[in-house]
Image (cartoon, rainbow, N blue to C red; front, side, top):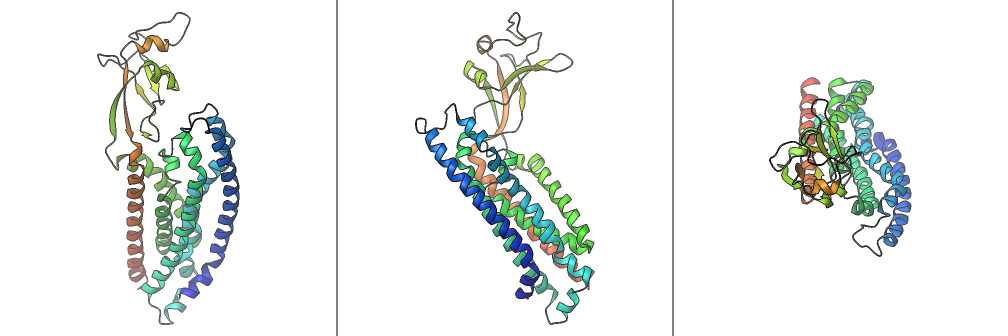
Length: 333
């Protein structure tokens, strides 16, 4: 049964292995060059706070984002092209009956297919994630943003859980739809929906966010990206993300600026007016006892979140495998 599954699956695996080899050559070559430039850049400032740091990120943005996109796409494509045909193609062509008549039970037939395909999926995705994490390590030390939703899903161990889940999802949908193309399309749509839902509605609440009131002193105001005024009715000052919390995940892009009496700052109440300028000066605002409230996940929760989310997807994988096993006996009994 293992040999038969391998014969059916080897073409897809060889294509994935070739793609992984090409990505390895590209990212290793770029990564070695990146490390040389990073070493030169940080020779006089080990903390990575040099003025040319952003230029280094821009220089390697192509391999950086290419690697991230590959890790994000890999589980989705694996679920569609490996998981969905796993059972659907057998049912669609009727070849499953031949195997079952050779003394191989349904449970063993499904278990071998899921284990072999799932192991290959986790291995390929894990190697790709490890490669991208290695390449991006110098840029992570500069950007301090690996906890952000897009990058979090493309690093470390979480992609392994995504890959296992994608295979189980595709196999389950293939069993109930019994059409390969339909199962592939639905798998892609369902996996994309999960990938959008999890960072928006699940991941921020895996642990209670930290709530902190930040005073807007002169240094904080200068490190901010924007201090503007918004709102159609009684516009209020809004402080856009710029608080210096390295590697933390800021859960809100902006927060209203409040004064010492917790009143939201508006055009009518703002304490500083510079003639000829749309915005008050930073020095004036720094002496006005202003503050904002921010919610964030601190940097030291990065790995706990990685393991928790991986465990969630592995639990979903087991549940989908159990549902597929049940459906195989009940629907085809």
